[in-house]
Every structure is written in C-alpha cells, then in structure tokens.
Length: 430
Image (cartoon, rainbow, N blue to C red; front, side):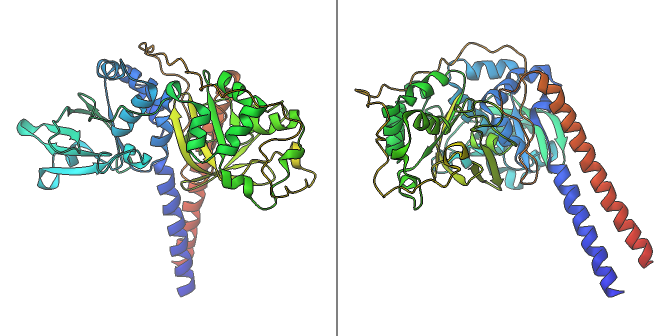
C-alpha cells in the first residue's frame, strides 16, 4: 500500500509539472494583435525580436505603449535603441493592479529584460515602481533622482503569475540608454578583431566573403564568428588544404541570411539555411538549446554560442567556441591541421588591399505602418525549439498555424491522459 501511495504521489507531481509548463506558454504578439491601439508597439516587438525574449520567460510583465507614445519614442532612434527601450519596459516579475497598489513600503525596485543583456551599468537595468499621490502608480529609472515619467493607465491582459500586460503613459528612459553600437557605424572586421576573432576576420577578407556578408546585411544577417582559440583546437582539419571555393563555402556556412538574436535561435527547429545552403538541406545548421545555453549543430559536432558582440536589427554577430564544420566538406575524416595558422589557404584569393568598413544597413526610421508583421512563435517551455527560419514562404504560414494547433491539442491530450492515470490509480487504491 505504501508503494502504491508513492506511485500516486509521483504521478501527481508529473501532472502538476505538465500543467505548470503548459501555463507558462504565451505569445505576446498574438495577444496584442487583438488591440489596434498597441499595433506599433507590437510591430517593434517583432522587428527587434524582443517578442522571443518575452515568450521565453515564464513570469513577465509587459508595460505597453499606445501608438502615439510609441511613435514619439521611436521617432529618432535606431532599432537597436528601440530594442533596449522595449527591454526596459519588460519586468521580470508578475504585477497586476492589485499588486501595484499594495507594494510593501509603497515602492520597490524590479529587474527588467535590459538588465539581463549585460549592457546595463550597475542597477540601470532595474525599474523603480512607486505608489504616488492620488492613487497613481509611477515607473522610473533606477538612477537616483529620476522622475516618474511613466504612470500606470490600465490592465490589458492578466494570466495570473505568468503574464501581465499593463498600459503605461510613457516610456522609461535614462541618460545613456540610447547609445547601442549599430551596424551602420561598425567596421565588421574591426569588431571581430576586438571580439577576439582576428583569424576569422582575416579569412573573410582574404577570401572576399566579407563582401557577401556586407551585401546580406540590409535584409538580415546572423554571423557566427569562431574565436581565435577555436582555430587552435585539437583535431581541427587543416583549413589550408581547402580549395578557394570550399573555403568560401565554409565561411558562408558561418552566417544565416536572417536576423536571429540568441533568444530567437532558441525557438528554431529543423535545418536552418545558411549563406552556403544550396537546397535539399545541404550546408544547413541546427540549434541545440538547453536552458540559456545555445549551440549550433552541424551534423558532425556542435559549437556553443559564447557571446553576442553586435545586435542591431537586422544584423547580429555572435562568437562561437569552435569552427563550424559542414559534413559536405569534412564528412570524410579530414586531416588535422599541423598546428599552424589557417589564415592563408594556398588556393584562396589574394588578400584585398584594405578591409572596407561594414556597410550601413538602411534602417528605416520613418513611422512603420500600424500593422503587425508575421510574429515569431512562443518559445516552448521545455528545451524543444519550435520555429522555422524567418524567411519562410507565405504558403508555410498556414501550415505553421496548423502545427501550433496540433501541438496545443497534443499537449492538452497528454495532460488529460496523465490526469486520467492519476485518477485511475487513486480509484484503485481506494
């Protein structure tokens, strides 16, 4: 009897865990699609991919701006700066009207998504929430002496203890928030040098692939740059033996023709086309995500995304801790490098006279149309990425929606089955 009770308790625990996981799944852009007054805010969530960061959180409060307030905020900002403003409006705790009006001591400091980027100085990634006179609730930067620019207006959506959407009157800002590095002002090779990817920088210049990257930057580019240590790894094939064409393919394999910050990578599944992809799954990458760790899989090995050195929609540059080796080039047990640098393969084109600065992606700073684009799906609660590459054809959209419905149905059926099992075991014990 004791063993049976233990089994019952175990089944109850599994059921509750499944219910909790299901409760965590939310899609902020789908929710806001039903509110035309927040269409511009929603548009920017999708452009900057902050929606993926929000959807990946189990507990979050979104402070949303009306179209007028969002238009004023974004008027003279780059998308990189708009992204940070949206992150500062995203609180990593659950606040509903009742909690806002009953703060302990009338005030508290809370963490935001901006604090998680590592770009915030000190407590500048936190927001001060305070009960003001007349029953108002104000929001301000954590900087001492900051004025309460934003005040609570109304509740838009509440999913208790998981997601709260609150309208506020104005954005929250502080001096220095809008100084994000941009692709428009960045020399790509200089950026890579500074990030500890000097060998990779020399290779893309000597092979001419830097021009391919530059041409892709306007529409979207995600670059995975191996660190210098990656080129010293034991067992790395001798890249100096590659032909010029194969070297180009290898370097193009390190880039996606779409904007994919780390949070968005976590939502991807299946084969992801690279700049080297020729169709039929050749030269594709895959994502292996576990918690906050993200690695890129090649089919032969995987490489961890170590850091993000540039994130300016539609361009992001990540460093990775090993060279990505496509099986199309290295599937036949290649010879290891003799320990020398692979900077100058014999058959690669001669280096260019100078490395031109990376081109300036033409950020459209005009007011976007008040229409939400195709949104990224919510990040699954477990370590199972779930989205297709951003440049999927329109015809796939309906299939994606059907997959989402089927997935939701499967989750519901699975939970129902577990609940039934618990009930059955309980009935047996009784």
